[in-house]
Image (tube, rainbow, N blue to C red):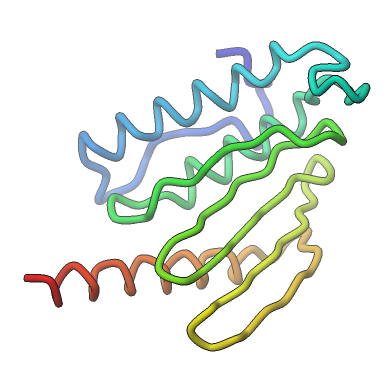
Length: 147
């Protein structure tokens, strides 16, 4: 992988990590890394190449936030040279976009409660963890209800 050696270099060190999580993270991190191969103009509208700082941040987020039961996100390059990580599961739409080396733009919508918000986050990512934990709890509850 070409991820930069920085504070955001991902590691797979979750105490509850299992083979499924390790395999999932390997695939997600490999795909995030491959975004660096997109040339300038990759979207036919003149988008810049994806910036390594954004790739590093996205890789760090995925490697540190994913748990064995967390729904798998979609990873999308953005027209501004960043990376967007999206979860659409259990009635929650959750989008996290890298907008700088340590800055995120976050969108949340919960169809069950009608709650919707958008905000920029630069250091306290506890809200991201809270949303993912809630999504995971709903997923587990749904699976238990099905039997």
